[in-house]
Length: 150
Image (cartoon, rainbow, N blue to C red):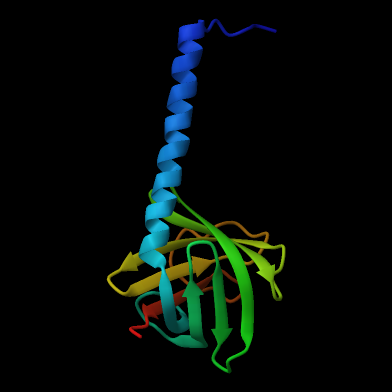
């Protein structure tokens, strides 16, 4: 087995680059969280252009560390933690259920924010992250949400 030939100075430089990358990702996550704070309402739709409503989301609340939602009948859809990042030019969201039907499951998604409109496309737990903003019959599901002005 060949050992890498890395000097102590080179190792320090490599560690500094890795740590700065992690720090930048964390800073982006914190900045993005602030953009998403608030109460949203909307629906699961076919795609971002046609807007055919498939299910109503009465209220989706995003705080700095949690997301909770209720459906059109006011029933809780659960609560989860979330992580934001950027991957391949897409903004990503990984939501993990902490209560409700998705408890302990992680759903991979993508999101974009245009003014007070949030588009969030989420896969079912255990499925790959979607690559576009479109609902398919067995997932992923596109939510188009509008920030509520209380």
